[in-house]
Length: 130
Image (cartoon, rainbow, N blue to C red; front, side):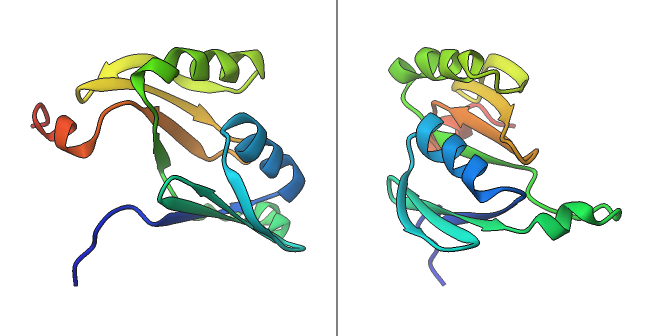
């Protein structure tokens, strides 16, 4: 098996319309397909599947899930992206910092999923990672 790169992330969401606003209008992803309870969004060579599953949020058990999903962004677009998050009152859980040869900010989407914007590549990060 030869894995060539990041393919996609599937994220269970409470409200598809609210999530589409966040991922399309704020993060700039493109809708490729929108169904009744799902949507497929493309950005670059990767994609995200949003699945509306409000019943998951009614359960009281802790469910394992994604820790965070990181999106690559160029350094020249980083500051304006952080400002867009702040302007839209998006919860930032880790303010912008230099990390792994790049700039990083971690924030929360409307469903509580931690997302990261990061400006370095894996190769750049590995030059300083221990």
